[in-house]
Length: 223
Image (spheres, one colour):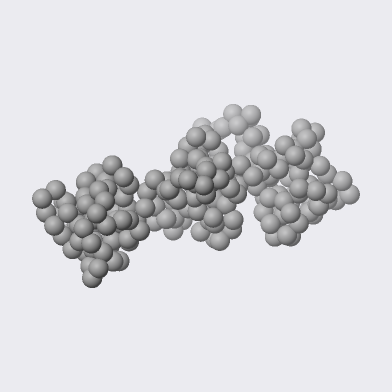
């Protein structure tokens, strides 16, 4: 089913604003915070519906003059938000779901999530500074709060504290079947008994030992 015209329009605007953000990054010209501009032709070459840029100019999302283009204040804020959501989606798909091909899904995902879901994903991921392509992820309110007093909701067992109880959230290890056979699955309540020379865990009444590489693939949170 084809998207409604208003939805198509907004998606194009988001795509154009995100492309313009990336051009600013490449040029090192400060994300359009002042009078800096980038090439209009270069922006058009990255878009499927370049004539629609005229509508964005009329709606005061961008300014176009003399073959150059720059953000308005409103356009820059919206570009920042869509870029942040896209790059967080890339991190989610690459790091948590272990997908190799995710760009199209990240493009769809960035249009679908609310600010609340965006912050929850960022916190879940531990407020990553960059996407899988090493491009900076714009900071959000949750990141500023995290820098002061909040810890990630989910962390690798390798980064957890001895003597603490945890709930297993997910596992990323080739040993999933083996761990499942001894009761270490998503939802399990465990206690980390020691880290050296191996990681010793207590799962219910069973005590097990795993190597550090396995522990790095077990992600937990406080119950």
